[in-house]
Structure formats: C-alpha cells, structure tokens
Amino acid sequence: MTAGKRLCYNDACRFIGVWRSLVSRMVRDHEAAGSSPATPTIAVADCISFAAAFSFAKFVLFLTHPAASYIESNPMYWDRFLGEVYGFVRKGSGNNMEFLSMVPISAGWSGDRKYCATDKQGRKLFLRITPPEKAERAKKSFELQKRMYALGVPMCVPLECGEIEDGFYTLQSWVEGEDAEDCVQTMPTDVQYTLGFESGVILKRIHSIPAPDDAPDWETRFNAKIDRKIKGYFDCPIKFDGAEAFLDYLAQNRFLLHGRPQCFQHGDYHIGNMMIESGKLVIIDFDRFDYGDPWEEFNRIVWCAQSAPRFAAGMVDGYFDGTVPMEFWRLLALYISSNTLSSIPWAIPFGEEEVKKFIDQAAEILGWYDGMKSVIPNWYTK
Image (cartoon, rainbow, N blue to C red):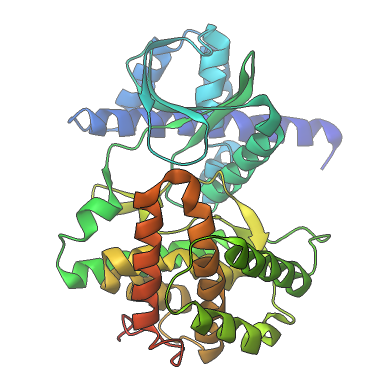
C-alpha cells in the first residue's frame, strides 16, 4: 500500500468511525429518553442537525470512500474510534467545558472533584477534575480507559480530557443506573450469582492488558508492601482480636508470590465500584489503577462477600470459567490477610465509625477462613 493510499485509508477509518460513534451515541440518547428510533438514519439526521461542526462533506466522503465496505465488515475498525466523536463535535462547536449545570458528587475517596454535568444539548456527563499534581496519572488513566472500552468492558465512555486552570479534567458518558451494592442484595440469589459471574468475566477482560516490560518484580514489590503493613499494624495504637492468625498466615505463605505474572489492574474492583444499568453491570472508578498480580485484584472481594456472598462466588467462577485452581485460594488468603492488617491504621483518620467497621470486618473474615486454618472462605459454594 502506498503512502497516499494509506493516508486515505486511515482518514476513512477515522471519519467512518466518528460517524458510527455519533450514530451509536444518538441512538443511546433516544433510548435513554424513552424513545427508540426506527433506524439509525434518524439518529444520523439528528446528529447532523445538532452539530454544526460536523462537516456534511466529510460525512459524504467517508460513506462513499472505497474503504468503507471493508471497514463495515470489520467491527474492530468501527469501535476503534469510539469516544473521539464527542470531543470532535464539542471542540468544533466551541463548547468545551461549558455546562448548563454541574451537580457535585460527594461519593468516593479519591479527593478529585466530581460532577454530574449537563451540557448545552441537555446531555448528562460525568466530569472529574483532578488536582494538577495528579494530572499525569489522570491522563494515563484516561488513555487506559479508552483501551478497556475498545476491549468491550462495560463502562462510562471516555470522551475527552485536557488541562484546565485548576487541574486536569476528564469527561465521560453518564450512567443512568443504580449502585450495584445497594440493589444486588435485594435480588434473588441466582441473579446475584449471574451478575457476579459477569463481573468475573469482565475482570478477566480487564486483565488482558499487559503490564509494562519494566514493571518491578512482583515478589520483591509485594513482600515490601507486606513488611510496611505489618509495621503499620504494630505501630498502630488500636489492635484487633485474631490478628496473629493473619500474621502467621503471611509468614508461612510469602513463597507463593514467587514468579507471579503481572497485568493491568482496575485497582479497586468490587461491588461498590459497579452500577447496574438496564440489568447489566457497568464498571466505574478506574482512578486507582495499577499493575500487578491479576489474582491480587480479588483482595477487594471482601466487600462483595459481605454484601452478597453469591455475587462473590459468581465473580470467582466467572473469572476462572468454573475451574478455580487451589493456588488461587492460597494466594487470595495471603492478599486478604495483608489488606486486613492495614485496614485499621488506614481507617483511623476517618473516625471511630470507620475503625469499628474494619474491626468487625476482620472478625467476619476470620470466620470465613476458620481462623485462617482453611484457605477457601465459607461463602464460596458451587
């Protein structure tokens, strides 16, 4: 392929991808508003009318370009540029960071400012503003979210990002759903399991993104983390009954860390960072992303097991497609032991109520594991 043809082909890919993205978004907007367009053509007409910046000449160009039929037959090209469209339209029409309303969102622990923002077209969006010192990480997170969205991870669509006077902003589609933690508990146990299974399948997809080649050795890195957490526990003025069982398990099982693979991690994957929209899970809050042992990602399953044990069991089965290796359970007990030791020192700045919550949680975990004498928690049943 010559350079000229390659340029034409790439342009066609981009414009056709933008067009399909715009169509898809408008169809979703119609459905969210309670109406369903008979054909995507209706959405296209709406798109062209609302976006003066969207060049009709380009629209015709990529619909008639010779590469169009090839791209239409390859879904990977269709989805490749999803997310560009909204930035394309907003930037072209001069609407960047101009909203009719911005309702603050107080949930979460990140320290970022978060809003439900309504733009000039009346669409709800999720706006996050990160302090300047965290801008590079926020930018990296946004790029990784685009990769995950391209893999089919159900999540807010990453639309645009950029620097502003007081930090770094990211803009994503708004999820019209319910917090999974609130509603899953009230569902029948078979539905809880099915949703948990789905969350495990999604997590496996997230973990398909590899860690950088220069990622530090996992055994060395996590052993240092264990050492810090043990020191933090002993330095903490508040102790809890049964801590010795966690300390003993850690001492006896550090060898399990040797040779563990690494990948991209969501960083806080549990039912509290999931929503349910139209009966399906949507994963949120990727700002704590990291790289590490994929199985370590399950250390937050504690929150799932407390809220809905069958959901937690489904998550494990979905990830492993029903065949769970014993080594996973041994490592999960190690990771949960490490987390539990550090939970009390972490909670102290947030007050007595948070401290009590984690002391109660430690007691519950010890019950699941029979004082760490069993490596399979009692909430896991086939």
